[in-house]
Each structure stands twice: as C-alpha cells, then as structure tokens.
Amino acid sequence: MLVWDFFRAFRVFRGPGILFPLTENKSLRLLHAMTNIERLYIATLSLLIVHQIDAAYWKEWELFLLPGGIQLFDILNLAIIPFLVYGFRTVISKETSGRRWSLITGGLGILTLLIHTGFYIAGNDRFTLPVSALIVVACGLSGIAQVALTLKRG
Image 1: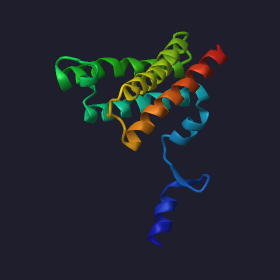
Image 2: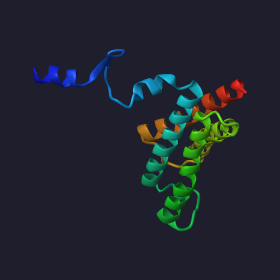
Image 3: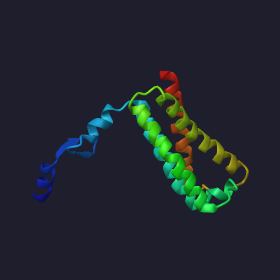
Image 4: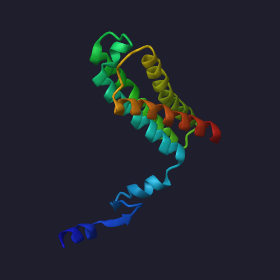
C-alpha cells in the first residue's frame, strides 16, 4: 500500500520500461520539446565535463606538459566550462551565435578523441581503462554528430 501511495503522490508516466515521476517543473516535457541539436549539445558537454573529471585522475596536465599541475588544470576548467554552458544558452534561445557555439562544443568533442588517439598511438597508457576510453570515444562521436547536424541545419 505504501508503494501505491508513493506513486499516487506523483503523476507517473510510463516510458519504454521505465517509470518517470512528472514533477511540477515539467522537466520531462522540456526534454521532449528539445531539438536534436540541443540534445547533442547537452550530451557532448556532459561527456566533455566527465572527461575532465577523469582527466584529473589520469593527471592529464602532465601529458600536455602544463606547469602548475592540478592548480592550473582546475583554473583552465573553471575558465572554459562556463563559456560552454553559456553557449548552450545561445543554442536553446535560438540566438545567431548558437550555431557557432554548437560547432565549437562539437569540435572540442572531436578534438578530444583525436588528441587521445594520438597519445594512444604514441604509446601512452593513460585513459586506457574501459570507461575512460569509452568516454573519450563518446566525446568524439557525439561531437561528430553535433557538428554534422549543426552544419546540415545551417
């Protein structure tokens, strides 16, 4: 009975095998209202951020010979990520600069894959754990899809 009361407390939407509570903020409706470019932007940006979290584990700053270690690495991320989040704002508000921001973010996803592929070919053993490698590849694939769709949409 307690479980039923829980589900009655929320309006429940039955998706493909998954239950989604519909809260008052209508987040599920917003997700369905998003365009494919907006979804790809979120996917690419999320993957890039997760990659940067993973990069802290692998001490990526050593690969790029950055002085300052984790300190400079954190400062660079604090400087870059807000701009990419701002770029998402321009995409969802359909500003003319949104296309450029979508290309930049997609390009960063592609660049992440290319750089790490180069490190791997050069014999570097970082980012070789399955999830780390999957994140890098997903960054590139999401970036390719985002750039392609952005260019197609004009």
